[in-house]
Image (cartoon, rainbow, N blue to C red; front, top):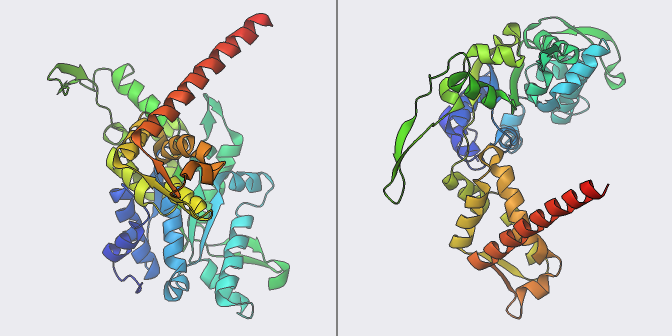
Length: 376
């Protein structure tokens, strides 16, 4: 594709892979457009439940940049787990592994003959994705989490420091240098497990009890009832993040805090049917390797999505798990599953049977567990 020149073009490219997260895509696209123009850009914090698309968004950005040599040379991209920064901080070398990774990635882009000064310039204008940043909270269960505190401090040093001590790898001479890391763009992401429940408690039974009012909804059969409709996006306060264990100094380094939305049935259906790395696409490739064709009916797809939707806070992960329960037994013997016409067909009846079988197996497992506990 031609080099994107605007956030709208970047967003269009990212949305080919990222489904149902319009705000996050737009925020990332603006930041990336500024970054590629070598303009100053604020860091981004992504908050979203497991399976909502945080990692998918990161990979989409990586693929977009890697697919176009002109873009790749304008930004080095690396991904690192937040806990790694904490481990390094404990050893007295905060950010060493990240800076080394950036330098090595720059070398891959510019070639082994590129001068060290040029490699450092490329590396220190890179894009850094930090996974599971919620794992470095400063407190857990009301107790100080020393490793988390050190990791946040290490990340703070990298985010804003113009002089970070760094020893070059042997292939770059091994000298001790100071690098300016203030030109890096950090995109930190985490599920922040427990945050949803903490905020919900605050507005329903905690200090803001009664703030969330019930609304009247009408069921399909015409019966009216009241229910609490809660969205973390509507009720999250900065203080909630502080109480979770994000220090004020750390949070202030993010210009944008973006909450990813729970995936709708429409989004889950699109992920299942059209997603480039969906379980369905992978299964179709598998059966194709045996000369068979895997098909799925619309009713079956809707039933799978409905089942996954029963676990809304697992998003696409729930979708993959449910589909796996359907297709798994068919993969053992593809030709037997396909029959004489070479087509493996997943219809509504097959989905219902698989789900019923799994529920029955789960119930039997529970009973067995009780028998074991009493027999012990």
